[in-house]
Length: 557
Image 1: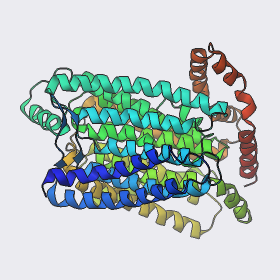
Image 2: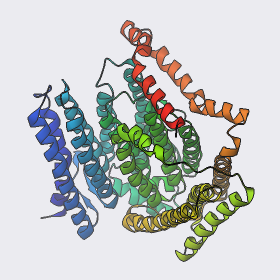
Image 3: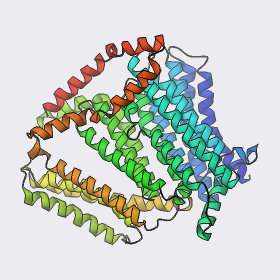
Image 4: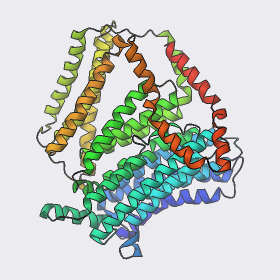
């Protein structure tokens, strides 16, 4: 069996999901037993195929299928460490989400339609990560957006969902245009759509010092396509407003489809390597989005809205990490976030009960001692420095890795200070110390494993330029100041300015209002669309109730 046939086995995974989607056309309604069985079998086969393909890649390395097309443009599959990692993650998430959906929508009048659309979306994402040519990569990129749109408007009688879907549609089309323009520039430069040929020529030209016209613009366009796909500031509002879709859609969106942005950057890492300004844009926008969304997340009273801002922040952090050139850490964060967020959304309905059940435990109170706060920060810094030394991190050549680790230190500082600067027992301090050690060891260990797995598909980490060092320093200073304010938050809670700012951040600094007005202006001239907009407020009652209940529970805890 030649390598072309080995790579072709991978197409069976999206193919079985496509077959499930087609079958759903004939069982669209209540209790579509055949569609449900096919969906379940598709998820199991997908996991098996991912495992088989992983075995082939381990033994044979990079595998590619023959091109179906002409002029070096068309359809071809690519199996490497990155595609296998993503394919396995999607297969596992698909199994979880589909199984949850079978019970969640049991009895729904359009259950067959929903399962079919879910299967089509999973197939589109799998094709995206398996693409070996610019044409298939672009087609699957658009298909992921189109299939997601069908899921977002599953309940057409919910005006809020329609408005969010329209905002997403506008952002996605702009992103598609950026991606298409980038691919046209890449094809003009290399006269091929084959990803491997493009990557090898870039590496050869960079090592030889040969200039590549148009690469800077292509890289910047790729960055904007990724930023728009992953709901980065200021176009993040649609992601916060898609909560009226069924819970499995939220889980698949936040755990899977948002990752298309960071995946695109990692896949095109050699293109990023040839650019000066594209990484700076990722550092700036990704870093700001991560910080902004993290702060807004802390002020939310609705569980699902908080999870939405959490996803925006995580995507920003992943893109920031890509901008620093630490692609293994970005993929590590991406995979970990996907499983965490899938669990968070699928279990969000039981969060209130868990909080209520924990009422019996009394929360510890912060003291606000400057000495204890300083001690907590020093402990976090000392712990991270120790493990960085043990792992042999080179401060000169791996400064970007240390910068990402510094953000880990900021998180550990808050963990230590919350335990030390409180009236809790020594048991809590020891628990916090144990968790801090586990987090630090996990970061260095898993980053090393990720680097080992992906080393053949990404550029080597190089020392950042002076401009990048300045950008990194600014990001770290702002992050550090924010964390320090959060550490002091218990002592500032009664401050009027602090309380006023909390209200503004709870509303996302009203950034989404401008986007809302733009979308409404685009649609309000159509009579049907106008009626949808006028009745939107009438459909908000369930979420007002949810917000009230969550706020009431959180205030009592």
